[in-house]
Length: 80
Ligand code: SF4
View (tube, rainbow, N blue to C red):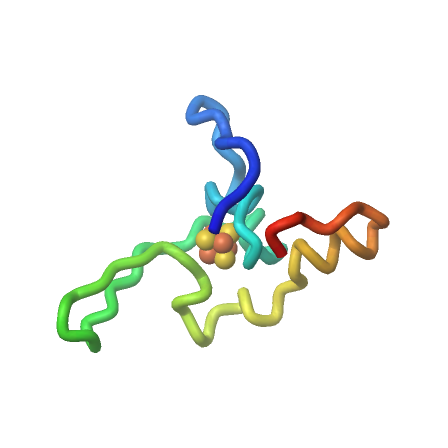
């Protein structure tokens, strides 16, 4: 679930365009745009653009933006 304001399409965020509103966002999401991945293992072809669907991606070692905001003394997001 996304929360917060929709970013301007004229000036989208770096990396994944959802990273400012995604509760699963990690540091890598600010830097890299996730590629389009096709999962053909399901009965119907499924496409996604999210590092969470890439089990071997460095996303899983990247620090959580939620943890980062807490260590910086900021309030956690309400949807966490
Ligand atoms: S890549 Fe996935 S986890 Fe990262 S911000 Fe985008 S939607 Fe969220």
